[in-house]
Image (tube, rainbow, N blue to C red):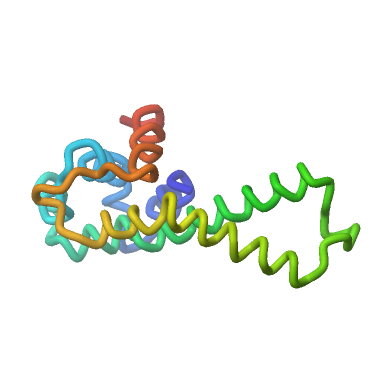
Length: 144
């Protein structure tokens, strides 16, 4: 997901110059507890709003949630030896499964992550499971 966003920035007529700052900006936010305003100052970006448009944290979180939901659903259906071509799972049971998975992911991962990116970070640590996984990814992703 992050590599796709970086690639899109690199190809953007408006934001390509900021592409080299994408991963370092995320590192400042997730490792060093910096606000988007502080990120803007660090990289001489006009303001917090521009950083927000470059990073698109809420959109990224939503897309990652969708990918995780899809992957988890595939794993569960495979474990149960079900797939859409078999038609074994009725529509109501499938809808219930999706609703249950959605609620589970939101409660365990994404509600807290959304709160973290929606509030000011001046004295708030990024402690959600999502933030932990983001730090792990950022630690091992290139370029640094």
